[in-house]
Length: 153
Image (tube, rainbow, N blue to C red):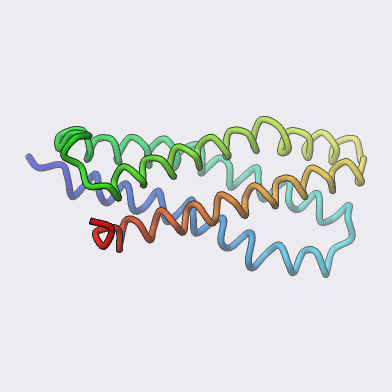
């Protein structure tokens, strides 16, 4: 049985969840929350939103890498087109950034919200915002590689 269509479906679904979630959070939710909510409410909101979003990313990120590798390995690294290699690179960078965000600034944000240390929470949220911006750019680049990467050949 040819598993490529199923692997591609899982790959695209996980990318949609991850990149789409970052786009919504960064472009839609963040500007409104910054204007309409005072720091305590805004930081509580982000702590809760990120908690739920990160649960999905713990599923989507490994699925993204596993499905990509499962499609790449039968073809082989040597025979894979350049844009596949670049997608793997950007995907690995995205995972590394996510792991850093989760382990450091997100942990700091949760601790600050629990302790009601709003300045520290704001600083942690600012770091998260910057890194999510980088990851969103990488995610959009990865989508561009997936769809138009053949033009690099």
